[in-house]
Length: 318
Ligand code: FAQ
Image: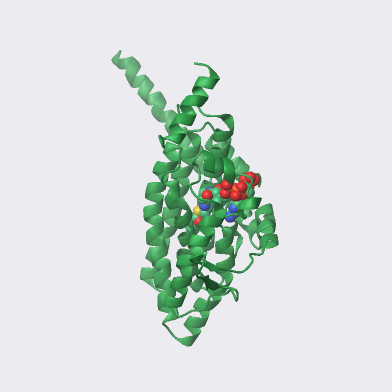
């Protein structure tokens, strides 16, 4: 088949919502875009363990500790499914780690903010996992099969995370005045960074048009951000807290909330390595990689020993 036939077949699949699978022909740029997005997504899950991991030893009860521990472990699992999905596109896990550790690869801006109080565990579950679900539910129908399938399980787990975060916020918001203040303070600090998670505005998003054409993305960054605002403002009111945006206002004509201007200078500073915790996050990941060398060596030595034993048994049996 000529490249034109392959391209036609690929376009036919995209236009008819037939998933693209690892052995299928695909345009180079489609492959590149997917490797970029899926590996960034995987890195986000792994780096995303750090801000919450910070609170496991300080959770206020055994129940909260067990829940937080399970949530952080889930995020590790998400990272692993996603690295596996990216590997089907021809990049190795070592290459992806290398890109993360050298600062070449991005990961979500949100994980470069510090977790200062216990209420931040509520705000992260509610807002960060909430934004992740808003973005990832449509990704269950993304055009690349292994990514779409990984997202199904990820979304089920994220929705538990979101509910546990909301429950933490609810308890604090209905608690003592000090607890309520803590909840409001966490909301104030996480609100804007959570809205930034959806990426730049559509007119500044170099990847949106092609990702929409290839049905990698089903909604634009601004569409998802608006959905997030519409859903969350109601939840903030239910909690009895205040939306940290003086410009928030229901717009009857649009059928959506209008909201204030996002600080895009802050966003671009964070994604180019200059957020409050970028250096700390990367150093922690690099250190974990270096300190895990003996585990990888031992696993490789064990695998080699098993393979040698198996080969020996097979040659004796023959
Ligand atoms: N942070 O042209 P676009 C989670 C970059 S998972 C950093 O609009 P695109 C679970 C973008 O990469 C959170 N960089 O790009 C959890 C591009 O740079 P490049 C992660 C960002 O790909 C919860 C440039 O800006 N979720 O939270 C960000 O079409 C709790 C131009 O942007 C995903 O990764 C950002 N926020 O749209 C874990 C979902 N936004 O590569 C632990 C999958 C944009 O050209 C605890 N990803 N950039 O140098 C996506 O849906 C998309 O990749 C977007 C960006 C929407 C993030």
